[in-house]
Length: 146
Length: 410
Image 1 (spheres, one colour):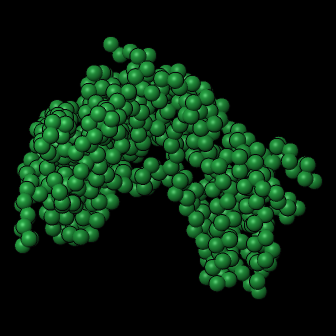
Image 2 (cartoon, chains in turn yellow, blue; image 1 turned 135 degrees about the horizontal axis):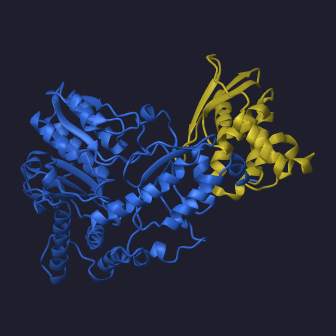
Image 3 (cartoon, rainbow over the protein chains, first blue to last red; image 1 turned 90 degrees about the vertical axis):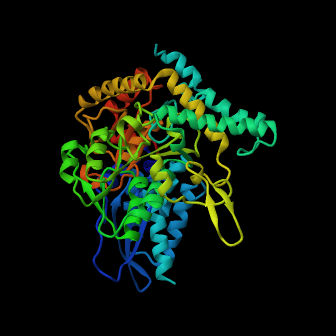
């Protein structure tokens, strides 16, 4: 499974799909959702991530905004990874993702399609793009659990 | 004779540029320009041979540097055809534009007065007026731009009325690169009793400037966009305005005398606006930059950049997947998008080919309403760019695909 996922052609397809048809690509009017706006100062990525937390579980995660392929695709994949997880599970996945991005050892069984970004860390100036969605959900969880 | 080979040898950043340089092709000249050796030498020479303060003649070296500083002021006056007393050194175009809005606007605008600007302005030429309007109760109105985003004389005439007290526009805008009819606009503005403040950040470096012939009231520009060092710029203003308006800062260097009762006598313009020790080395560098530009001639520079632009745009117009927003502009600024690929990704792809361009709103955040998109790729040419460099860009844009943009990360 993981060897297949390391095939560049498949990884490229995953990223392209999530860029051209991002999952959960809408915002919610529901006031019980937590909303985090992330705009980069060093590039033009600008996204809003929303999450509905109920009984310690991420019931729904969605996002909207304008961003590059890496930001859009990684945020789309993030919403799928986070959906239905407990807060503890979500925070663990986020840390594993960051480890992968920073080229440190990580648990790839937890990251599913997010392994598509396992090489992004080699270009330091794109780390912000690959983590923008994860930073947003991390902040949302932090705010909600204050 | 315009000798591109020799010119490129004059620039350390270009001298040894090859396919492995970072970047190997620089097309972000609207953001800042490379420096000729003579400018670098002037800056270094100040620090290695004359590293003293100005405004004093107590010892030979200080007198000498003070003289050189004032010679630099003369060079600027000559370059824009103004009087030397009308040249104020600031920290850059943004500071100059803020000085106009603060020193003149905040002081003289009254409730209900109108500031007439355009939706294509850079943040530095519209935000200071937002503030001035907020503080004085003045209102901001916008000249309607054409569909392509150009400011025409016809539309300007329609927008002018007796309530307008100041017109604030860029001579050449930094996203679409159209040249506004500044001279005619000044005549009309004056007929209505209004002043005209011109943002020259993108024009002074690329076309001949003549503030007297144009009869404009204020002109702001930066050294670093015209081959000079960062950290310094110019505010030109008619002497009567400089006499009437207030400086930003007050302190050493711009006061003639002061006493313990709080009485202050300020220096006459332009010194009235130059409190504190300036970026001396940058002013001397600006002087060297002006000398370099004059050695080529601004008319020649305008023509060379225009020809290069036409060459690039003609090639781009042949590509169905590339949309050029300003095909009819005349200067070296070309703004485009590639169908189906986010502007940021286009810029990153070009970076992987060694080409430096810029993606985003380019600080003209209101222009979004006009061109209906908030992210574009901006290419800005300079006379030291070559057809060969443009060819590499053309080939990269001809063959760009979303797949290749993604492959950069795999």
